[in-house]
Amino acid sequence: MSQDLRVVLLAPHRGASGVGDYASDFAAAIAPSVREVVEFRHAAPRTASAREIRSEVRRLRALVTELRRSPGPVVVHAELSGGAVTAFWGVRALQRDGVRVTATLHDPPRAVWYPFLTRGVSRGRVLNQAIHRPLHWALEPLERRTLAEVDLFVLTEPGAAATRRLRIGRSVTTVRHTRPVSVTAATTMPPPVTERPAAVGLFGHVYTGKGFDLLPDLRRRLPADIALRVAGRGTETLRPVPGVEVLGPLEADGVAGFFGSIRALLLPYDRPSVGGHEMLPCSGTHELAVALGTPTVALRSTMTEYLATDDLTLLADGGAAGLADAAAALVTDPAELDRFAAVLARHRELRSEEDTAEPFLAVWSR
Image (cartoon, rainbow, N blue to C red):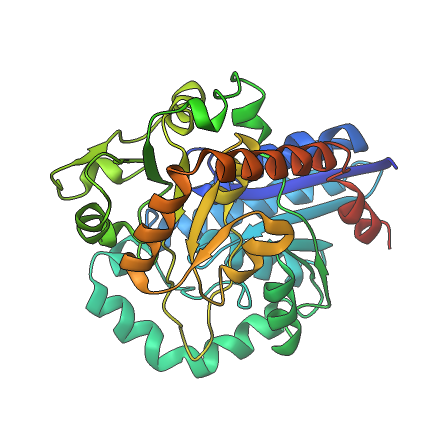
């Protein structure tokens, strides 16, 4: 399926966040199926002032207006996450301009949980909560009105179902997370999991709910002969924990090397609810682990249960203690590691046959 369509991709800069990285893979996946992909990248959440956000929205509107002067349809596709202030207000402005807009929600069921999270507001946790917490009753209707004519895509079925229950968006389509080809295409696959060091790791951007605060407890509960390594943007700022190796931000080859140095990735996710709703994001880190043939062990919660679909992760109960016990049992069992690796390999084969663009093209063609 191919369309004579220009797509303006509204997303954070690559490297600024996991959503920005996802957007790069998404742009590459849809490019062969449309006339043109025009990338409009903006600052990551918490990094832009109110003035800068207004300037970016004006620049976005000017770009879209110019594109619409040429023949052929134009659609703006936004990557919306909890603090994607520029993208949210950009979508609102484009809707008033009568522009066709679609969006992927990365932290469903809400489109943006903190629409006033400017650089100044984010400097103080108390200020952020003082502004947003009393307004949650009004912000949800604001999102509903803003996205009333926007077709939405959600990366997990639980997230999509919750979004439909809130009646946000004109339509909600469940799609698979885009394959992380920006990393995997540029690297050599890590060695077989049983040939890797006896180690487990955490990977990704550091923010509340990702489980990096559990590192001291995890290190204490893991056997001494199982190494614990962490990497990703922001990990270099973590408080040192004896026995935990911190690698900091990594480029593509370094990411593959990190996954090649562990036998299992830990996903101790526990995102707090906001305004009475649980966040139900898709884990891009899990997708990356699958792509690089690395088993995963996750704390069981509403936001991680979908990961066990098709036997793609091991769910553990009991907090840090249960997670550490499950991980230690897995990485010291060669037969179970081989079985897990075979499941991941089969899943990668099936994913390679998927057309990422197809569900988006189906909606854009309406």
